[in-house]
Length: 172
Picture (spheres, rainbow, N blue to C red):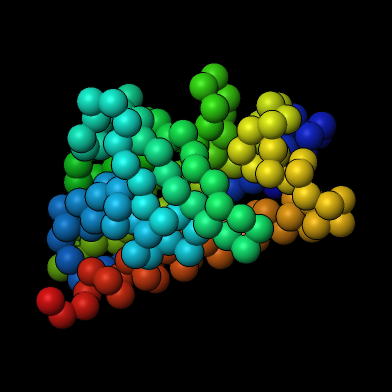
């Protein structure tokens, strides 16, 4: 984590897992918005906004999330969509950096290595995203939420990939 002022606070992390399916299958699962809720510990799925019906650069979608501190929706923009190799999206208010989630799919040993990364930026908008939710918490809870943010995001990545592997390798 790099930090100067709060406006410069950044966190990142990553994990990867080998899954016994072709890259096309893993990519299709990750880009199927309603299914994300099957493996993410926070995201409960989403839906495309406007004319978007699939993962293409510039498409937007609404993500639905739930955690112990509440429920919230996010505005999301696809920033990379190169089937079956790369998919990335940014969760942020327009014009902000927010959080970038990236998936890279690499064929290996008859299956696919899926690597998920996150890069989180503290938004300068006090009422938006994580900063807005933290701002509405009691001070002790807010301090803990900020201090534990990077660890929680890393745990989410690891849990998401483990659940994705279980779901895609399960007998049908």
